[in-house]
Image (cartoon, rainbow, N blue to C red):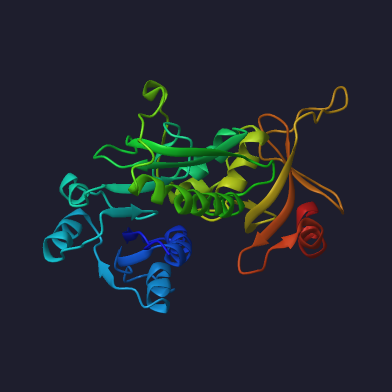
Length: 311
């Protein structure tokens, strides 16, 4: 039996935890490098949980300086590092400490959506497909040479949660197949195509959760799916603070002759349906979560709160 490839794994978030759990079955994990759990974080740190369950050596580095110090203090013997969902800038010195460098699995078709949040921005853009890019990192922002890429379709009802799950599965498959090929010298990384066409994602801000009905309904429906994990999509209906968790668009909605077009933000409701007028089309709400309550179908919301809409 061939000896397992030894790697040092760097990652912190839930995507990293899912990746580590799979890779630990295939490769020898010499060490796991992860961030310290923030003091305000109430839940468990997912990577720590997986590492502890599997008895893996864990080292903490929450920023670039700490990571550099980590590699000064520890003499890792693995020829290869693997980074997934880490969120720490990695210096050239750390990259160079591995004879084969550090491989990253990035959840877009690079050079599309370089940066911090490629999954969210693939949904916001309305594009029909995305994928996973496995690359050897350099000191640039997702500018490294590609080992492989694979495309998947984005379903019309995909949320950031469902699409992330699909991309994690694809990433794990690609890493399992291509890391040994790269380590054995059977594949030569190549430059990203058309770097002049690169697009860039960014971290979301909390205030982006407020639905702006002066936007077209199509854009708002994308935001609801893209912001499903965080920061969510919030508004006020019937005097209640609510989160909209699922909606659909009636882009062809028209009004009878001589009736005014509802202003953006106007609520249109009956006993069975609830919609909000936007700058283009109606946004029909399917699932909704009032503050302090569980998510519910819009029919249940109307049964409980519909009288407020007519008062």
